Length: 286
Image (cartoon, rainbow, N blue to C red; front, side):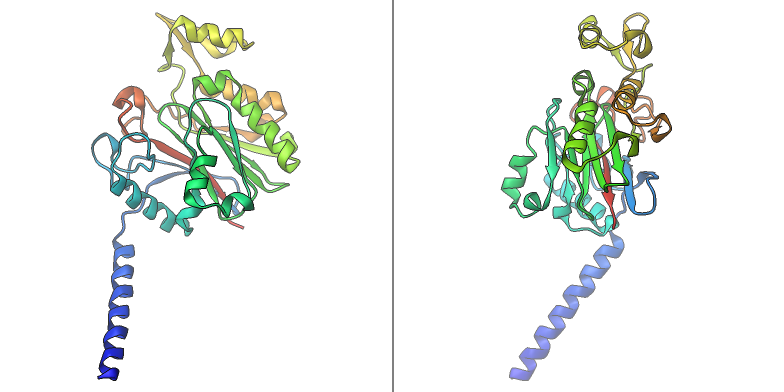
């Protein structure tokens, strides 16, 4: 009888692992728009393809704050973590509020429980780390995502630059924080500006134009007057990178306008705020 019970338990464990293997084989894989930072770094923006969300959230969304179902978000996170070969606790995204707060992910943060982590990432719009196999990213759907990599001191950063964050120079603050935290020299940084709304599609009111002008931006180089003002957010963030000392040849532009490419990337202006978000992220593999 004891022997029968032993084999029954062994068989149950075997069935469990076979089921787990089959589920992993059948899991939908996210379709990523990848960036080249060298062989030791993985960097990407998620597309709308290859996930479990539906409707305006379809197919791939991991943003918990835009109204998508918790079940779909969990499945999408699992699929992405499996693709990256990391644990879910190593996939980090802040709750952004269009300001300029920066979070530094260190060993002390990684030891926190889930509740403490959420508190540390609340109200954060840029996130950085020098830990390997920790994937950090930001969520956008027309705003500008910016990724930074310091290959000398081995640190990475992901920045959410909406028009408010851009106007408040969040990119410049993030570079300064990398310098203060890791000793980063801006000329060592390689930067990728990801998919976001372009000049043609980003029509704004006079109050937005005035906010940029009052913040000291050279408006002739970042704006055009059509029926209304249009502002070039990708170019504005590139100018901030150059102002900090990042080399021009080290700033890469995706050239993707999310408003125009809304079939591939989420666009809040096209789909409404109750829709999915792009996750633009970076991770040092080793």
